[in-house]
Image: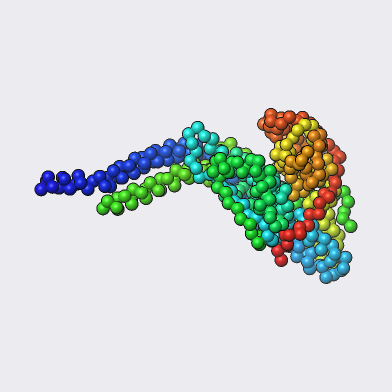
Length: 252
Length: 219
């Protein structure tokens, strides 16, 4: 009996016990890697860091409120302008000129055909001795994509709904990305409106091919594109009042 | 029994792998950013918020002007005309003047370097920029042409002036700081960049027609 049981167990075990043993070995390896990579992060999350992080979150919250107030106030300005249009021909013409200037400046929401480009951090495991920052989206990548789009005829561009205007910068603070006033996180969705063939032209442009295309290939940055028939971009929301620059001649 | 065990183990492996992949990615949680990066973010976001508060105060002043005109039965013509002046200046459709800095560049700057320099000046608060007589708009990027750099289809020579209107001290301090854009470029680019403050900069309007033809306003 005991001999039968023993021989049955011996006969059955190799079918799955080996698999379990191999799986447990993989688990051990992955678990150790996970433990090793999470411990240092916890150690660095000091109380001082928590205080700083809380300040950043507070500033982001404050910025959200300020931008909402600016958007409301700008909408009220436009209501005043729209309401006064009927009062005189001169004013109607002036308001038309303001509307066109807003459109040219990126201060009006627009829609039309164009291109969508999404880029995100690589999902590959950083190899031993590799530089982790090579595997994340850098500001240079975003700048290259945007430069290729403008150079290919884009009329309007936004990154994660941050509309680009004449004063916009794409700025890196460590691995963080700031566009206009906002702190953005991946995935980055770059939407551009422009003439037919915008996407193909931008992907073939030197500004794209020269650097970011190679990083996508070498480091496996997540990347996807699509041409679209009707995209909508929001208006820029932020400070449009100059402190230092004064118009030389008012438009007639 | 065997299948159940294998399923449970596979599930655990999957969870651990997901955790491991996530740990390789960028620390997008604010609390996991390094202290130095957090300090820089606080400084940058604080500065941006101050700009936004100033901008908001200006819009509210404009609204007061509209209300005053309305309450006194006056035309809103002057207020709207001023709004047009402001927006055309912002877009680059109108010439502007003011204090700022002038960069004299001499050498072989490539398109990426010039775009980085422009981006850095914008980030430092430049309100209006021009390369020689090319007023920069949101669409203006330097690209490599057949024989030289091009901006808005116009050739840029090896010697050019990049002028920026904004706080002269702030702009100069940003680009000349140790490890800043000029010291970075001088390590990689064969070009000399000399920056100075200027009290009287006048920048032309762009020659481009910026009103879009494909993009239509959202009604």
